Image (cartoon, rainbow, N blue to C red; front, side):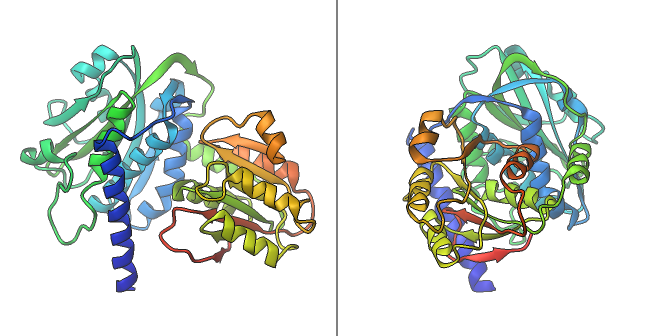
Length: 385
């Protein structure tokens, strides 16, 4: 186990170094599009709620997200940044409550940080608590501020201005493992998206980390006030798919975790592969095992479209419904060329996934295959959901 942990740590460190190098070299890119901030917070809570609960803590979302404008940024980058915030809160504040929230703000409010008291909610932080922040170009008029608030031990005032620097950790101790690059990457991505980041903290009172991204002026209305209620309603309304087994391919672990959690609610089982090529091997070895394939469209090596084309060539597999997931819209022409049955955009919701499965799976007991090209290992394993 120690060797495995060491290899995983080294792999994560290498990946972080590559990502930071791209950011510092001006090679980082982002794909800006409209997306619902509520859905993004929903997904982060879904991913980390059980992990934080295992430490004795809680992860929840405030009702500020009920009437927010649509964000206009890169949803994948935003997910990654919020995941970093929550993961750090879980690591540095085990057993403490963690709260996610998001508010709308104008450019002037972002520049002056006058929005900060609105993020404190019922926390122990004082309105004049010390903070550090940096903004990018701020060329837009409307913004959304995502925030992660914890009631942990806090960060010393003298270290706040170094929290987002590379190879820095707010709390230097052998107890906390990490590359020290996570928040430097967060800052770089936020600058790339034309937003900003910041931290406010008081020792023994907790910490507040925030991310600023551009938004539209249009409000996404009609959302339920709490993420927990939405998850509960989904769990109650989800009808089991009789131990279905499907195939899912994605090049990010985050999306695999989301799919894994959502499928659990549907009582679906799965296999996981590290690439589309490995997934194809499993399909060819077990042509009758799987009843659906859900694949990322932009896979390295064999892409999702190419993956689908290979499956259509095999008479034993060509009947299996193929669903593609992508960070951008897949056109009907592309669906026709690659013979894709249906597509959905990231970030996806549990409800959307349930509707797609219901549309294509009405038969007897089936199975699911999960493929991820970014996992640190090349192992294939079955996961019971």
